[in-house]
Image 1 (cartoon, rainbow, N blue to C red):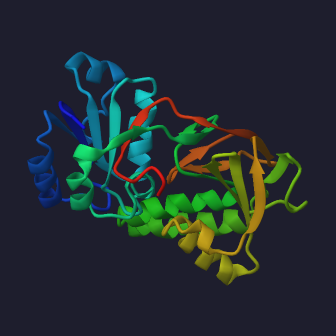
Image 2: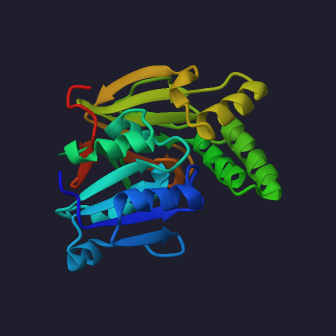
Image 3: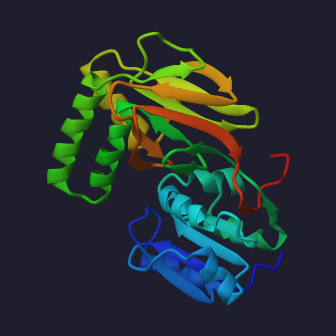
Amino acid sequence: MNTSPIWLVTNAASGSNNPAAIDALCAMLSPARTIAFPHEQLPTRADLEGAGVTTLAVFTGDGTINSAAAALEGWNGALLVLPGGTQNLLSKALHGDRALDAILADLPDARTTRRRGIRTSQGMSLIEVLAGPGAMWADVRESVRDLDLGAMAETFGNALRETREGPAVHLADPQEGKAEGYRAVLLAPDDDGVLVEGYDFADLGEFAAQGFAMLIKRNFREGPHDDIGIFPKVTVRSNAAIALMIDGERRTGGTEEAFVCEEFGLDFLSTRPPNA
């Protein structure tokens, strides 16, 4: 598949980004332009169309990929997601759990595909949304990434307190799950709708351990949870503004939030076999 001309977005704060990796990637891709986010703004649809760009490669974490994709919805080019972050969940979905070199080697045979995502009041999620007090742990993850010891102590205390004492989130429509609600509700796109899981914690030690495991390591589904089900649309409610984590980035919603699974209007390049 012809991917030229191609622009490249990098982010020095992302897990796999370093000067040597970026230099090697540029040597392989030969981008017409390299954009160092956040020092430079992400390209808009008008930017790419004006320059005749057919492919935008994004070598960043999932949060920056989400922002780049959101700005390009409706564009007739394709987004090439590369594993430039820590977890690289979208890259794994599109290419399998493979190294950058292997993905680029298969790029000539890549195909375009569409992704289903979760539409929220705070934007589209291409991977997963966490709603409820437990989403506050994303702030801890951010301070750890910045190696800010003061912020780490503050955000850890806030996240622990909010997860333990903050108002629970309840599934209002459909009325499923625990009547008392959950510390966090995970919502992910599925072929049949919105997949929903509920997370709770039994004691202080479990709050801290599970908080780090879920929101810093981003391995939500390895922890104990309730498999609530898959629904066309989900509405959650709380007695306070609902903390959200959308593709790893923190947002704040209202006291009621609706989540709908739908196709996202952008082509992605995939090197993964269609039936994998």
